[in-house]
Image (cartoon, rainbow, N blue to C red; front, side):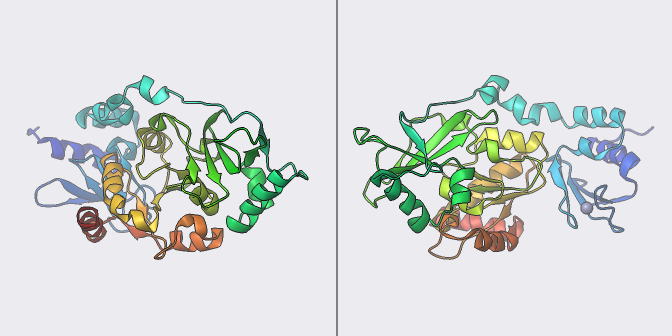
Amino acid sequence: MTSLNKNDQLIEILSRSLGNYKKNKNGNEVIFHCPNCHHHKLKLNIELNKNIFHCWVCDYSGYGIHKLVNNKEDELLLKKLTNYKFKSSSDIFKKDELKEEFTLSLPKNFQYLANKKNNPIYKNIYNYAINKRNLNDNIINKYNLGYVNDPTDKIHYNRLIIPSYNENGKVNYYVARSIYDNKFKYYNPPANKTAIIPFELYIAWDFPIVLVEGMFDAIAVDNNAIPLLGNTVNMKIINNIIEYKTPKIYLYLDEDAQKFVYRNCEKLIEYGINPKIATPPEGKDPGNLTKEENAKILKNYEEYNFNTKIKYKTLSKLK
Ligand SMILES: [Zn+2]
């Protein structure tokens, strides 16, 4: 047997499961038949140096080419050859760090808005939710929205409170939005945001996921949306996306945050996650659009490819 360079070795192993292929001149990129959609043409693009794959037809994509082969031996061989272990997020980030769970308590005297009351504070908060936020009873119930019925609690009084729960139903965060448009609109409790997956309880990782900035955005999308509580995707979220092989990731930031799209896309790409980009119309955020309007915008996503990469890179540097 002649000695093969590493990429040729990888290709040979892959072809045992995937069959025919074509490779580019420098041998870094190779195309196979897609094992997911079985398109009759060679549509599965593999970047050997990055250890990522992507099908141009069905969007099947991910990090770790060993996932593409159909037998354990070749899988292990590929993992070894690609140093998969080193690049897996759980190895880069200490297991403890990822396991760390941040929890906190809801404010004292927290009341559920779903329990109708006949007092002024209930009515004020409820009216704010319905009329100013365009929420409805279903949403109020589904997201356990609430308020604090205690005028001496200067921090939380007169605020609509949105709790976030972790996978086990424990509160891991909350946001308290003033019902008045004063300077101090949002109260955010002190928290280690890198140890939180906001709204985790409402997330099904094996379905397409939408990443948005705030809790009102996630509620408005109301379809497997994670509020980032800012504009950076944290490692806990990335780790779960990899572990659960989440089929699609939409990055759907506010209109004025498009300068952060590039940074987040590059971070996701680094882990073999190929995001779709959705953008609200000028002057709007996902949070002030209806569920239907958001669904429509998400349907018209952009792929993260050469052109959009340059566009968002430019936006990130010049705005
Ligand atoms: Zn495919």
